[in-house]
Length: 438
Ligand code: ATP
Ligand code: MG
Figure 1 (tube, protein in one colour):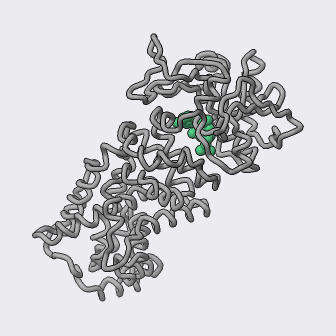
Figure 2 (tube, rainbow, N blue to C red):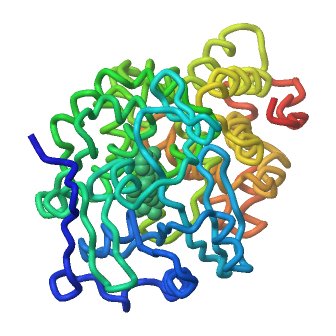
């Protein structure tokens, strides 16, 4: 077994590690120095230290201090306190935010004044302050529990994080990984994310419980899960994360309706739409093209929408109406698990509702569609469907061409199309009346 707690931490002096102030953002340095000059302890912690030690560029910089959030606010004018479950100070510098967290006290006991609350083994409130050591030991993975001290530029390791960094190993701090997952089930999702991001192996003791504890995610507020899903699937690691989530049966906890359909086949083809969509998103992120949660969730929930749509079409119902119902259905079932905010849910549903409309290309319809604010996303979505063989490639090509050609050719293209191919005619498209994300 690993020794995870040590009374005296390992302290690595500046001369023996690779973290240089030149690699830390100016704003994070400003925060560290101002705290120090204010008489407080100040450390760079978490992903910033981990990534710098690995020679990677950190996504952002987190700071830990013994100053309380209120004391932090008194030092920085550009500071906002956020979070109830876990109160933090955000110091704003234009678009960059440096997150400043006060040392937390750990342990399994509750507070008398309610600053730390534990419900069924889960930490639902964590605002009891503590020492640096306690703060280190309540963190999730040992590689996330390293401190860079602005006072002497040393790195402080309480939990064997440096060994694990060297070994490429993700290991939860503490003796009982299952208990650490129970305290905060989101750590299971973080395990998957870091495994993909860092290319690390999960220590077997931390990997085993993943197969068993997925159901704990049901206790997490859907709004928090939404944020986590974005970090999981929209930061360029989507395909890797998706495969691991499926492997550990965690995906089923987040998207049960989709998961249930993924093992099926469609016309003897395995269903690959979600993986292709995520691969696509990863590529866009690599190419620094914009991505939106609306598209991501449209992809993630498409399988159940499409099935329901097909079922409804088999009855006596127009395509637009069927899509409206199918979308409403999928959305309502998803909402209690992962809450998609309205500003994304609405465009997500538009992406879906435009799909049957993209099949009708006669007369003025295509002109109206290309002017639709969601056309571009809906067209990208159609391309994806064509890629996996769900719609005719010719349809996708038609739209690619329609966007590229001049008015004269457009007129020719719309004159030559067959009317309402494969769909009912003579009904008003109900989609155009769609309003709120209900
Ligand atoms: P990223 O590169 O994604 O920012 P990170 O490790 O910095 O990774 P954050 O979510 O920014 O992750 O959190 C900062 C630090 O706070 C983590 O490194 C970890 O020490 C601690 N932490 C965050 N979330 C948890 C959690 N759920 N349980 C325990 N510790 C956590
Ligand atoms: Mg971070």
